Length: 331
Image 1 (spheres, one colour):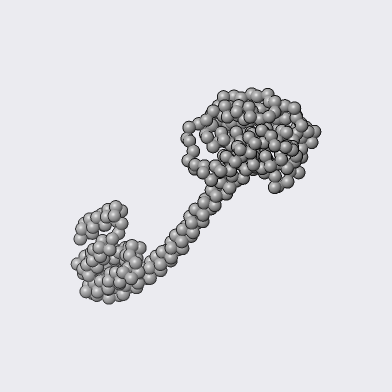
Image 2 (cartoon, one colour):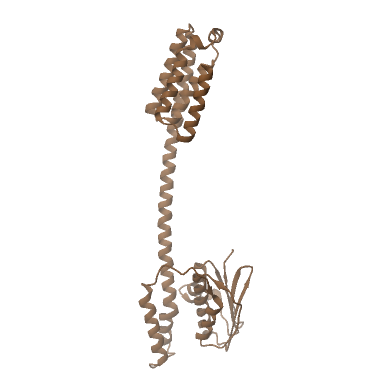
């Protein structure tokens, strides 16, 4: 019987490990343990029963009682434990050891109640944890959607600032007092930008772009003399676009500085791309820029931050301005 019990334990462990613990497996296990408990008269030495010690059959039944509570729902686990308890008490009585059967039965009842209570609390805690995780992932998905919506909104605001608002500012400040070819050309380009905002594709080309070529086009389009030093390098499309548009905004801001020329440097070192725009104009107090001004906060800093980079503006009255862009940002 000991050899057979060990064999069954090995089979039980293999099935429970590979397939879980189905109900039929526990039914067989309870039947095996209960049968051994009923046969204590022939399986346990009389002196062990007389001393009231825990026999190997009692330990086998105890393990079955606990295992049933761990693997089955209380509605099945408690009756299964009571069946094993009854088998132990009846088997001890048949062996002429009533005291041993009563003591072991009480031990089984304590194990049943404590194990069942533990599993109820564990399952309830697991349900609470599952609900909390569902709420967390629901909130995370909502936050991701909201972030994507805000990113798109900022992208459109930057595009509007760099095009339409800049044109309207020139008109509103009197920089252009009459109709001109430049104004018509700029207005036509801005119209294309506005109509295309809602139609831009969300899919981006995965091929890297030559950043030095992009910045070269920006300098060519800028209406300011520039001393250029561009180290050939490539960057992901979204990063190249961020550098290009942020640099274009920095060059447009030079017109407020009174500088006659500007410097533009593109460098790479240790996989970090750095773009520096320097003018020696009148400068300004960076801390005094109103929060509603988009030029620095969004068109430069926000744009680089959205691409995983960073932008820093250094300036002071009478000391010129330096705009430094770099990607990736490690801080």
